[in-house]
Length: 137
Length: 126
Image 1 (cartoon, each protein chain N blue to C red):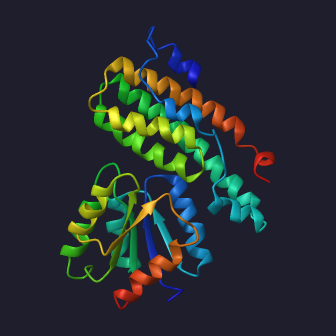
Image 2 (cartoon, one colour):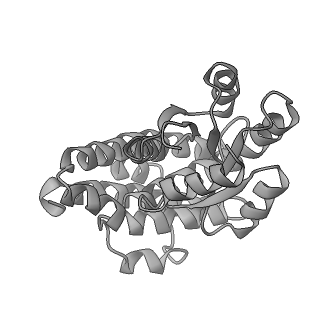
Image 3 (cartoon, rainbow over the protein chains, first blue to last red):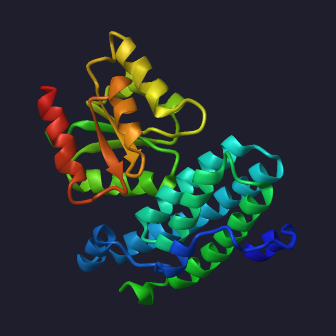
């Protein structure tokens, strides 16, 4: 995902964004989902995390498309939904980047938004690699 | 009160799945749809006691859906609870202004979701 976007991103100064997201964990299963694991419902949590990955991949494609088309409102809405879903499953760094995208959807420059989108895709890839059963069982 | 029908409306499939699981465990009957148009179409036959709806959805948003429910004499008795993003305090007032009976902030707390909905139902005398 990140590689796809990086081809779209020109040389950009990475001065814009998201110091906060760099200090947050990629993935920490929240207590509300951990409770399911502890009560023996690991498969349900695995299913929810798989759903998150699948849905987020599709939404990231829509977000990229909105950015390419200059549709800032569509971009803001996708970022909003992605932010909430990431927070729900404990993908904290990813949620923080989507929050920045949502906040700057209206007033950010195209280069800033491309930079954020690249970071979101990269963070999504790394987060998905952390969402393995051995990391929450 | 368990056994009441809850209609969940959210375009984020993760939230839809999680609320469905949690509310079924709490003993509610759950019907989940991904947009407001589907919800309005489902209500006459489903006759839910409560609609739990995301505020920000593509197409018709949760606020407009709530207004339509509360303007319709055959639907206005349904309890509507908004799901709002925790960082967006203004969403909470907008939800109440649109006619929502209450709101729950995201991320969804699986411990408190069922009890909160029971509270709203009890308050409405459902």
